[in-house]
Image 1 (cartoon, one colour):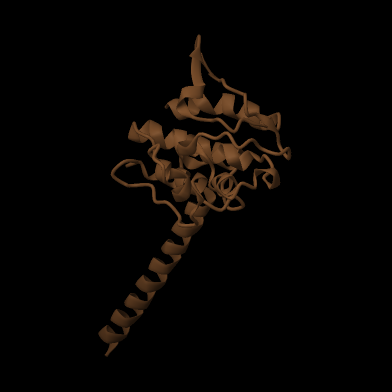
Image 2 (cartoon, rainbow, N blue to C red):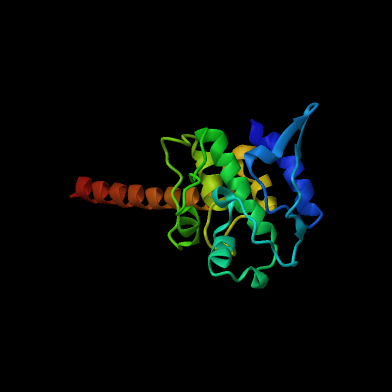
Amino acid sequence: MIALALLPQYCLTQTRTTVCLQLKPHNFVLVGLKWKVIDFENACRAGEPVSMRVSPSYCAPELARAVLSKQTECMHAACSLDMWAFGLVIFELFARQPFFADKPDTMQQLASYAEIEVPKDVVEDVQARHMLKKILVKHHFDRANIQCILKHAYLCGGMDTMQRESSFGYLQQTQQQLQSLLANISSQVRS
């Protein structure tokens, strides 16, 4: 699982509060037995203004909006920018092609508020698709952070909290329906 191998290096940049702003497959290199992140040309500390130089296919939606409106001076670096790009890198490991092709309208696609869907035929693993859905969220406040992803069921096994709650709710609903059905059968048998 290459995603697991890439996580330690990515986490290292996150714990130092460095935002790479250039995470993409070409910037992960294998050195010996460890993956390393390269190309820190646009990197800055969280909270600092960001550069307008971006890789369109891996650019976070909020940064795409700032670039298109030429207001990057208002845009400050945040780990959520890299988290989006990291999600696209993980997607590309499954799909073997970028989620967004490098076309003239890529930035407009990213800047739109329309949520994206992770295709089931590309990412067949339910847990991997669930993890990507948590990362590839267009609104940065709702995007999963690295701590959330490190605890995700795709990497740890089992179900994550949200899945557990929905499964438990479904179980309770099924139990209630079964009890109701049994009560109806029981009353009909007595009659």
